[in-house]
Image (cartoon, rainbow, N blue to C red; front, side):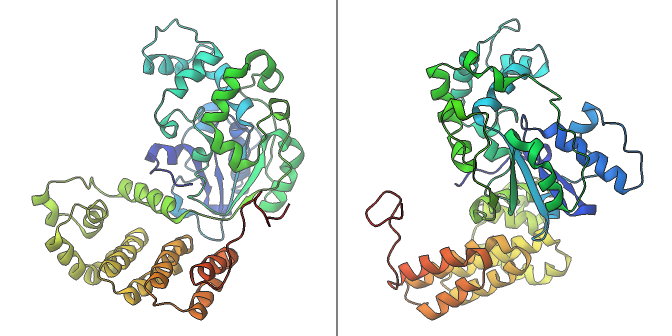
Length: 405
């Protein structure tokens, strides 16, 4: 699942990284986020020897906390990352009842964005129709946004997934996994009793719209499309340990652009910009050959002064330049260095390995050694590389002849 680059505000809304615990919570609106955020605030206060008895207020819970970071580059390979998800049928109904049916700022923003009178009261199915008119749900309010976007699925890993439907029973397991006795008080801060009102609001049209708009949520988190199952957590246990390298790269670009000045500059200003800005311009295809050559010469000199993010960008830039020049060994060398900083970008190196196979420059033994170096990726990588080399047969899709039942 490859999605576009998230808006920087989406990052600040959804990422809560507690450096003292090397723990990150990917906040998911209308799925117990107030409960988890409050518990993290209290837990961090207690760890710091501060007063932690009183429950934080709403502004404190949903404001930007100085005790946690929203910077994804703070999260390392050993960090513990978790989120809580909810059945899409119940979640979007809860969002409607809390943010649209009630008079509040989000309701007025929604009405204004759809050019409706401020005294309008859209029904639930009318609300869903309006959401369905949006060309891209990735950029709507976080309460209506697909959960795969809120938790940046495919951009961050590993992620432990908890289900709101049984969170009261599994919160203890989460604390044990975190090795952090969080003071979790499960209660409905913005309660709407959505789970008890599904039959009142859902008709065939509403079911069809929600199943279509949130198809990725149903599939990614194992939820049933049957409305009668909406109150039951899926029986699967999810620990997401795979990252789509392309999606994560887009994500890193969004973070880099927050840290640097605007890269959309006039061409006669290009040479006045620093190397990171010019690499961003190169990523966007806005440097000519002379500009690229100048950047190639400058990067080795600028390397000591580059930040970690800048070095990551420089290595991938060098790998891409080498690949364009058909110097695949240099490209692999640059990506090997990059992997020591960013293990999730193994997919970039895998893409080059496949390129070498197509060109006949990578034999089966080397392909297998490469794949075996990469932990949880190894089974899929070995098999795909062997298929490309004609050393293995593709696995039949589920439901085809020969597929396991």
